[in-house]
Length: 295
Image 1 (cartoon, rainbow, N blue to C red):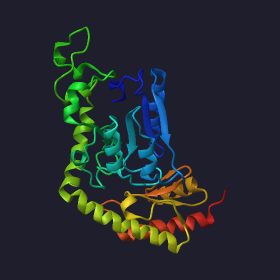
Image 2 (cartoon, rainbow, N blue to C red; image 1 turned 90 degrees about the horizontal axis):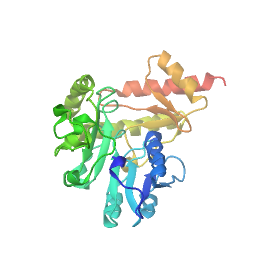
Image 3 (cartoon, one colour; image 1 turned 120 degrees about the vertical axis):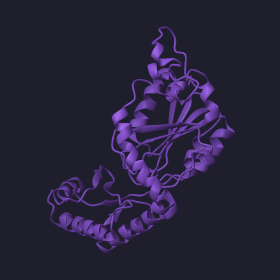
């Protein structure tokens, strides 16, 4: 969506949050070649980001604000409403990355009046890789002309007309090349299951189990790098131990599936199908392996 904007004028500021996923920031910093001025609202501790720090970075020169709903590194849940309010008040738009939240944290993009939202199916939506989604506020469609485009975005794609792009009047204007049809079909079952259970029910169980995970970690004197406040916590608990990468590899060998993020720790992500007994085993194994794992 960044290709829809002109960065050559006075309103050339792009605010990104200090916990944003690296791929997002790679794209944003590339826009500096087009005149964009990238400003990152820094996290004070590498794990949390008080919303005021993002809001204060937004001003009349801001064109776009990009924020992760839930931070990939710490599972910090950002309060999007004040960001959208400030951005719209000064004439800026807001782009929310829902990759780490959709499917486990309820969110209503229309109620929030979000301008853009994106994510994928590989995480909480249980749909596998290769199937992403993009939400664009409906009234913005006619005003946006993506620079990164392709034949499927054309108003008559199968005419294969040359010359300048004539954008479709529908949401197809935001596509580019041939869609990944097999991935889209494979993602449907995960969406259907999550929708049948309901995200509010998934969230209720998630909050209980993430609190349980942190209590278990505390019992073993394991460091937790996830916010204790349930209103600011996504669906993951990060447990930090020495030699976390090696511990994670040993857990995989024991058929315990977690992942590791540098400068954060081991990410444990219970979903609707996870039992409390599995959480107990996971934390116990982390403790035992960390105690014996050599440098």
